[in-house]
Length: 130
Image 1 (cartoon, rainbow, N blue to C red):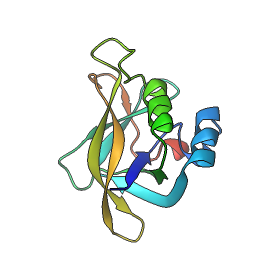
Image 2 (image 1 turned 30 degrees about the horizontal axis):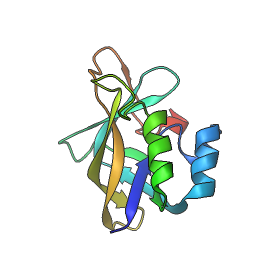
Image 3 (image 1 turned 90 degrees about the vertical axis):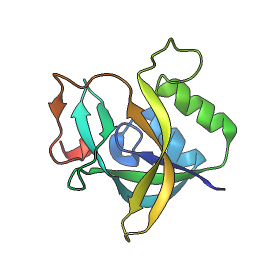
């Protein structure tokens, strides 16, 4: 089974973050996608949570990953590897995401693992245009 990752914040190719550059070099970009969730601004990075409301969308990109080493590096970056105390800041969960052409795929998504109470909602659902 292919391993797909949906990214919506600092890992997006236009985010100008060194980890985004590394991801873009080490994985295959499939293109734009969306996830049924809500997006919040934590600090200089976003937090997505799942939503039952179909109108709630988080916009990002899907990558196909081929290397277990890359997964380990990403889990460390998102502070959800075993080296971080529980509860971790994010959880990597397999979720349904929607490609730009409307196709559904199962992709790993880093979802925020704490309360979003008090955080600003990113109404556009797009961290890069928030």
